[in-house]
Length: 424
Ligand code: PA5
Image (cartoon, rainbow, N blue to C red):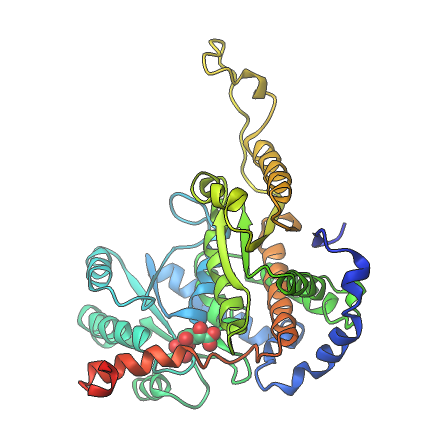
């Protein structure tokens, strides 16, 4: 069985018109400096993985909570994997609680978290490639002082820094204090870094099997290295969304039917949004979690402005399921479902949704994987990164920079430092 399959209403002939262009982009991709993620899963990083597993075991043995400090690409991937692969309720199997801070500047969030930590043993993993992003920098200032107050000299053992090998304020702080460090490779940008120590340490602490995750990513990196569009599913997805975009659809809705994937949606949204939204171009990436959103935004999707197409993400098997129980009273009239499980009904609701939306003139792309587990999630992450790079290049924008993010930072800094220029 294929690891991933993709279906859409775009015909093969229409797709293959892009064959040569895709091949050309494929061969030119490494002209960009930030493509270290492409071969990372197929290179030998065993020493790094061993060191991540070793420190993760130490954290699990000595702490109740790992506080991850990071924003954007420095936390979204880890939180996506954690939420997708750990239980909905209670502590993860084989892991400990992982919480995130530095992803916002809410004083209430920060204060509540510190109070929450007071009754727990804590480790901190601060992640920032540049080392000077305001949100995580502020959170780290708070957490560092908190750890020093609680653990004194021993705080140094409980703070792990993931940052650049050479530059940045955080690197300087880490060297001076003697914190243990993981390196974010220079040639891997934030939103493409989830399969490095950036994502791997937090999820290993949460109990995720990182070797399975990387096995899946490795499989994808091998399969999707194929330059021929006819055999490369990631490139096919990129071309299909490009064709739909050219037809006038300006929004892509990523939809799935498993609530544990809602944070994965956030990771996907950032990947495509920051990679493509440049020079007044790019599909607007939006996401929905079904069934919940069928009863919220479903009306608009079915019947509102025809500006969107939908990408349905589906895992055929989900660990954990239950049958609809028999009730002899049948007052709710649901006994006809008693030979079905919830996951079966969920899968049928997906089919129904795809049919209804297609009938309502919402083009539907379906991406299917056999099972929601570490292996297939690793595959899917790599799949989307490959597709995203190709898709941005088809739009003729650089997939690996984010100049627009600087605009708000500059205004904010001017305002914080009282400069009048920001007020005009
Ligand atoms: O994709 C990106 O590069 C960004 O989203 C960054 O990850 C984000 O801005 C955080 O940057 P840093 O890791 O430098 O703190």
